[in-house]
Amino acid sequence: MNPIAGVRVYGPLAGVGAEGLSDWLSDDRWAGSVEETCGVDALGAYRDLRLARDVAGRWAPDGDTMALARALSLDPAAHRADLEKEIFVALLCSPVRADFPSAGELAAAVRVRRRIVQAARRTVLAFDTEQAERPDCWSWTEATGFVLKPGHALIPSLELTLWPDRSGRLFSFSCYRATEYVLLLALAQELADSHPAALAALQRQWRTRAIQSGAFHDVFLREYGSLQAPLPPRYYVPGDRLWFRNPDAASAEVEGYEGSWVFYLGSGLFTNFWKPGQPYTLASKCVELYHWRDGLRQDGGRPWMDESVVEARVAGSLADPATTARILERMMRLRDPGGVYAEGGCIDASREALRSLLPGTWDLGLPILAATA
Picture 1 (tube, one colour):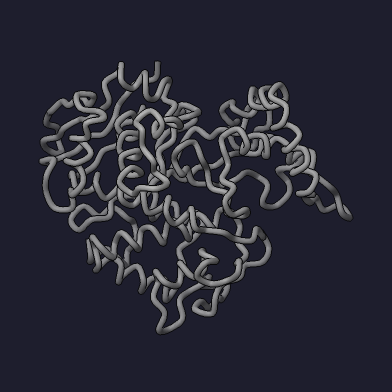
Picture 2: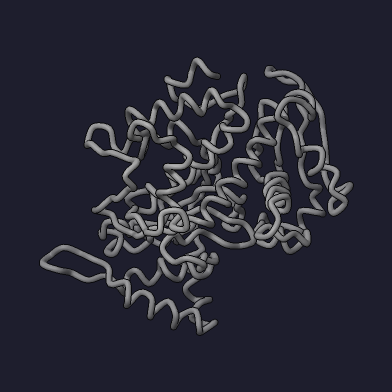
């Protein structure tokens, strides 16, 4: 059985920004199921919170959190509070301890994950690795990336870009850039409520230069799990950003098909930004990546992907339980290290989450925001 590390919270469980925490802990559905230990280390007094091992064995056996909502009789798609509770319980059974400098930061982490899920559910885009389109509220140069035009605010501009129910059209994105915009929107929404000065600074940043790619990861995100200490293959917290790797060397040469960046939405579902109302299950995502090898085509020496072939192969495999099981046996393995294509599957060892964001415990590495922390 996988270890259960849960969360460590410094300071009292009440305090600034900690709204919701007492409600989650007092929920009758898991009364008496949370273990608590106290201690003191170099950072101060803390409490460790985790699910009791026998409870975790029933609700998340072997670290599998994908049926948590069903086990707890939650309806996260319909009720915001239920989504936050699914997030909270998934954190309580984490195999890697998550440290929070205050109870307020733990509550903020749950809220911002909820906002990621809500934003991602509404996001529908056109997949394109070569073209990038944005609404008229953005301007672009090679030096700055897409930045806000004068008079336009960050949150409504991001909503207009991501949500076709606002704009009436789809804008072109790669999957990686799409996840950055969803994370930025959720962060900005949370800052509007809990750290307005930081939101103002973040908006100033996006008027001058976009933070993207590796810099975005370094500034805004923390990663937990590693190839040396991998997370269980079915352990996910709603709001996690994660990567499914394409383990086929040939089709991974096609730009945009090296792998797939997604968010975990909870209830066993992952984002599908390209097809509204059709989120992936773990099985359907693995089967799709497996069949990228069948869609590989060459055009004058340049590889490209025939999505129609992939869709047909995926439908056929998912209709045959034996074929699906065979594919999952391979794809559900931990991925190989970078540059290696051997016997590994598509499952990454780690997940990504936003850093601390409240006044006084701010942990995002953006110099322009240092004065607001």
